[in-house]
Length: 152
Image (cartoon, rainbow, N blue to C red; front, side, top):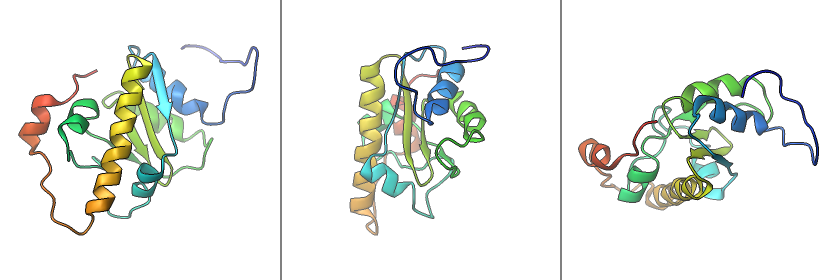
């Protein structure tokens, strides 16, 4: 996507289209970008102690395989154009991000892959919230790296 973008036909795009465009610019192999306001991921994105470098621990093998690491981007109001460059920068090295006080965004080579990955974000956020206050046993960094999604 280069040059100016203009609406040609149909319903106007959502004000969050800038997130999708940022991911497509950063990840040329992506053919789908999914953004949700899913309950558990959105709830987790509101927690003060979420790690900005990797918001959710790899509790399951499928999370490690489909998501890898999940940076937490700082809060911006929906449609805030300042979020675009931050999302694009994060998308260069991660195909999934969590927007603070908002929800996840995931890119994939196919819609099915993006949907599978965003489902893992939601389910891992759910697990993390269910386990909050209990000692957990996430995968070790070595275990997670062995099955992490390939970059890019």
